Image (cartoon, rainbow, N blue to C red; front, top):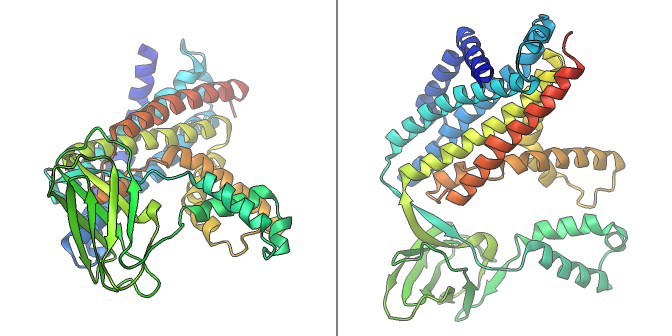
Length: 417
């Protein structure tokens, strides 16, 4: 333990002496101050708040990722190039400790910068505002819907031959993506119902968040009413694309988890249940939500630094830094590249190879960043405690230990330049 703590101390001292810590902190606070002038909202106070929370903390997190991952990738590689790594290895400590100490040290540095940014964001937006658990309707999984759609398409004689000849895995991937956006049409005078699973936080405070879409224009008049047990709320919307409708008690009917909407408008209402309908249940204050979001960001940073340290343990400094930054860039744009690829059947073989690599990087990075809390935080959605604990266990404990062990093996194979 003493050797580990000494490794952490030395790495922190090196990072501070190189003035990287001071520059990162100054750049982060400067971004927090300058961001509102650079990014414009929709003109509303809520819009400005969402933009500020999402992009202020997001920008600081991006700065920490780029700066600290480059430092982590270069740390062990630089010692090897300077022929100091062999001296560190012969000290009475495990090789994995060398890597783990650097991961912990740089994670601590990043956590200080993120803490300063989070406190600044809380000071600007206020800590007392409440957040809400965001519940979605209980529906069949997109994969199950895609299986049903696949059987229908394959049995339909009008299905194009190229679709029938395509690999099932390819067609299923397309159908699964589209299942998330499946629309439901609610005719005038019709009532639609959605089931919600019971939630421990259910109480006398419910709201419905609804996104409005239809066949004509998103600004068409939408009128109706929601009923949730003994709670109800009226909908009258002309201009908003997203509206939050509070539900007030008007009866003694128990809450059964069924949310009903009656369309009283003149037009059919089309919406995507998976995306356009949410039940909001009041949770705790924004300060606690910010703390959970901060914990998730730190855990994601730790996982990234662990990977960067592993690269530096086996590659040269320039190659390790370049590879780490390249992976960061590809993971950031991979989803957009996949979504905007014009040929859904991927008929070009060369493109299929590139898309397979892009999907692999996206899948690997999403396993770490899938619980990214910035969107939830900016929309006052509760960053769930269970998800936060899972992120801490996997990203802050599991992955750093795994990559530290792998780094120790790499150091044993290549202890010197």
